[in-house]
Length: 34
Image (cartoon, rainbow, N blue to C red; front, top):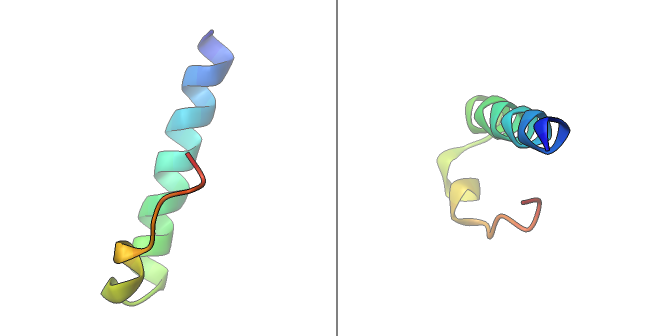
């Protein structure tokens, strides 16, 4: 259970990095990762 939670946090952190790396329009892309 804790492992799942840490993976979710990791995904959120990656998404934050992507927000910084890519232009805003990509934010409208469906989050199929989660």
